[in-house]
Length: 254
View 1 (spheres, rainbow, N blue to C red):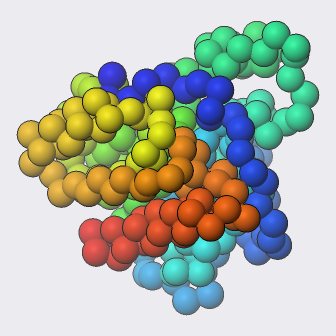
View 2: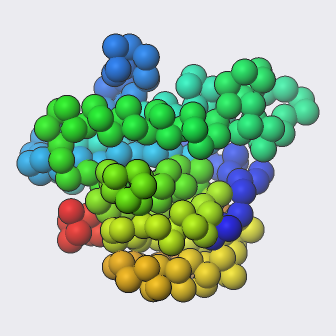
């Protein structure tokens, strides 16, 4: 793997404060919950698909989507967990993250590649239907895998440029197949995307001959770009710089 499977560090962090400015709604005839952030001054034909971490459509993710919209990008977050994200406060005492990915909280709602791929495809189709042909994507932790998957020829290179923050569960073969520019924000302390995985990802992207960028942030750990503590100056600074990294990447490549 180019990054390890998700672990406990993927489920902890700080809930951020702020007023959401986007809209909670549904698409695909009401079958898919989404959060949509619309820009006041849109970049014509350009949109961002926001593929979230295991918290799904959450306060932190929505605030980031609002900021992407403030930078001119129509932004959509799909509920890739089918109403079963970990932002739901109910969890069994013996909760196991990998079991949840395989089967869902109640055993009948898996969050594996076939199911998540289908949801991402619905979101991309919706963006196309709305007139957005140039689509970039951000993927935080769990979501990074699906940014990478839809940058491949096998998936029709539906995503033109990608930004990954502390990625998890990305297979080497998936990263090898990307056909567009990839930017990665990595944490100094990260058992999911450790030094050897980061260096391997660099080798893969170099061999793939696509534009790439890997920024390493010291003093922070896995999850910092979406769940970092804004009361800790280093975490706040790193989160803000990672966001700027994504925006600048898309401004140049999309």
